[in-house]
Length: 170
Image (cartoon, rainbow, N blue to C red; front, side):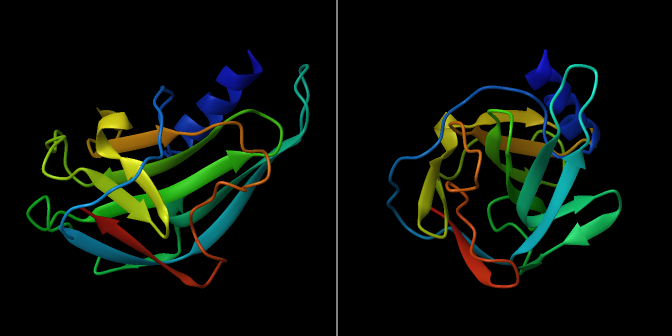
């Protein structure tokens, strides 16, 4: 019950829909697209109550929450999807609940789940075939790589806030 409540909070914030999947693995092949993210960061605190503990969910990367954009991206247009905008690329984790994931969103519904094999964020490789692939509530295409229990952000692939991280599609 607690995990579903947190996933509802995150889903309502427009970050991710609940799902399953796995990440990791190596890459290879030619560089099809490269994006440079100047890392933004934001934390949302839940005070607890109704049997749930107080918790904080932290987001790092390029994303928008409640009409505020955190971080930036260059060039921000996808070579893989005819110049469609990269809406967000963000990693999040909770300090209490066993949830964490990398999220990639490309504007426009029903973008093909093909044409690339690996997204490498910094030095961490995420296999497209291992991602949850769906359309989000705004009509965009979303890839999600839920991770293992990451209570501290140790699996966060992004650099420190304000620094840059290169994201490469191969």
